[in-house]
Amino acid sequence: MAVTRPASATLRLRAPLAVAASTTLVCAAIWVGDPTTPHGPLPVCPTKALLGIDCPGCGSLRMLYSLMHGDLLAAVRFNALGLVAVVLLVWAYGAWTYGRLTGRRIASWQRHRWAAAVTLSLVVAWFVVRNIPFAPFTGLHV
Amino acid sequence: MTAPPPPPPPPGYPPQPPSAQAPKNYLVWSILVTLFCCLIPGIVAIVFSAQVNGLWAQGRYAEAQKASARARTWVIISAVLGLISVPISIYYATKSGDHSNAAMLAATF
Image (tube, rainbow over all chains, first blue to last red):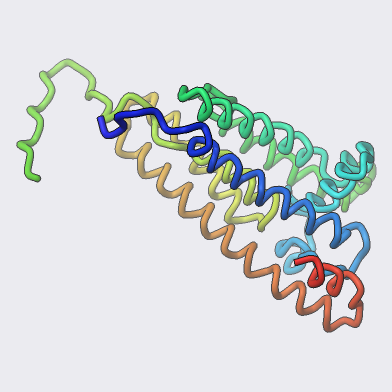
């Protein structure tokens, strides 16, 4: 075994702290950039810009902006599936950080056998549903 | 280091996995790039992510590792394309005359 002594808590938390720092930076950029106001500095989804369709990730920046401002309904409106993804990503981050802290691998949802297949189905379904060109689906356009 | 190759498994037994755990499926990364970067490469990454655990469970270890590597490649492609779009977008935002947000962002960092 290469590891002879347990690493200090600071060392083990280095990667989770780096992720937290970059997340904070991204959130600050979204807060300042205000994606809910058109023609701001934050990038429009390349798919949307090139093809003019709503991809499964479209509206994510506006969703996060609304979430940070406590407007849950607006967050759902901008990207409902993205909001679910945010919850799952926070869960995965928590399990990963806890696992690093305790030195054990914590089984999180993404290790589940069907996790990726379910994700793929949901993403494809969301992609189709939000591009159907008649009511009530037009209400999902962002 | 040249270790002798392991002896072939006795007939009638399934091949043994090369390690105890399935290769990484990069699902979290695939979701991240699908949400924040651009559609097509992100979805391709999720497709390969979805193959990893199933292939592993079927005992197709080499293919599972290949799917894992491909998921990683597509995550990187997607992230690079997404990162390229940021300066382009800031350039157009500045050019279009709406300076307020761009200037605020520039002042922040």
